[in-house]
Amino acid sequence: MQRKVTKAIFPVAGLGTRFLPATKSVPKEIMTLVDRPLIQYAIDEARAAGIKEFIFVTSRGKGALEDYFDHAPQLETELEKKGKTELLNVLQDTNMESGAVAYVRQHKAKGLGHAVWCARRLIGDEPVAVLLPDDVIDADTPCLQQMVEAYEETGGNVVAAMEVPDEKTSAYGILDVASDMGNMVSVKGMVEKPAPGTSPSNLAVIGRYILTPQVLENLNDMETGAGGEIQLTDAIAKEISASDNVYGFRFRGQRFDCGSKAGFLQATVAFGLARPDLRDELGLYLQELMASRQAAQ
Ligand code: G1P
Image 1: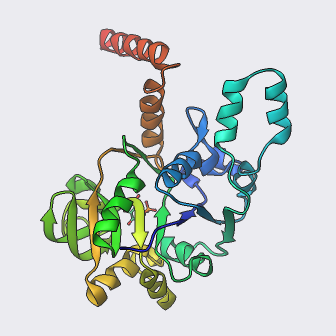
Image 2 (image 1 turned 180 degrees about the horizontal axis):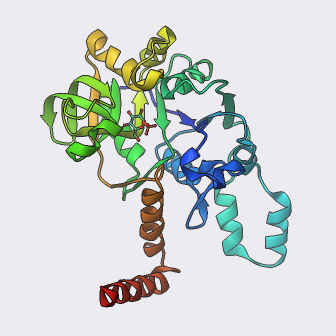
């Protein structure tokens, strides 16, 4: 039996420069996908996977994100008075248990590995999940839940993985596959953002991880890697040589890269079309838009 994963780290310290000027005053994680902030999708996924403690690695200017997790009693009373039960439920579904949320500051932007390391004292000697909220995954069984199930079988470190085209490998952590068992692959190496033409495979790491305490320990070395940053990929790769216990997990679901504008827009359309209250109006609009574009060509 593996030790249960009950803690998750959400690295949210990034500046979000790709979304300027909006991110001058709004943290990227608060930007809305339909009507929920990006971070809410990651929280919901973590809760579904049994996570009880939520650790946010933040930075200067993320106050709105911290406020988002406060309860809103005044608003709740108002909605209750007006009999707006549906909205009240929407709001209450986002309430977090007191003490379940913790914030740690990353004082310097030294990379993803460093951000995760900043949370080390709150993790201690336990396995931990890491969720990068930019990666939004639409799935029948939430991605992290799929991974927890896989982890319960294998133990070790489990990273979400997905095939990407050749020209995209240099944007990801890439797995060097030892043996391929379908959903699971055992890994003999990992490279962060390999130079074009040098990638060991097309299997990219997507922002969901289940990590052993050793990975956080490896981060103590503070070695810099790709882009001059302390990379989580390198700390995981160290575990391959030390304990040979790293697995890639091909999740079932569709991933949207909400760290890019095109990906954010695609996710907005896809999640909008999946919503019963928006489906018809949005679908019709898209059909008309496509038809008029075709007619104009
Ligand atoms: C990070 C990780 C990378 C991973 C990617 C997934 O990169 O460093 O290994 O493949 O997330 O989204 P970033 O997108 O922050 O540059």
